[in-house]
Image (cartoon, rainbow, N blue to C red):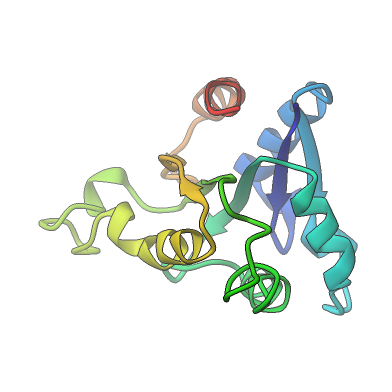
Length: 176
């Protein structure tokens, strides 16, 4: 069984973390299917049927993206709005995501200590990602603990990023 990684980074080539994670994922085609939204939909015209079929084919789904402005990149938000439709994902007949396991893999630019009630952000990461959790619950999916690298914008060393890539694969395998 492979994990579907929905990679939503507007410029993955410029990202130290997401680019490195993608490189690591590509080494494990038996474990991971990578689906790059910004590459697939540069025009933002999402093929809803194709996306729904892709989701139906996987039990384990990870959304990989940079956390900025405490949310998802805009194409991922549009993708969720378009793909998680009434009658398919939710509603009296919408059960296609029921029982699937969904998680987040995020590169976070700020320091981890700032994501505490006493930190400069004033919210934990779990509080920031509450809309994702609520959406997953709404469609009958199980939410997984998030995976994250903090300090991605300016602090993370190349060694730390390399270690995070290895840890990311372990996270995926652990939750398959």
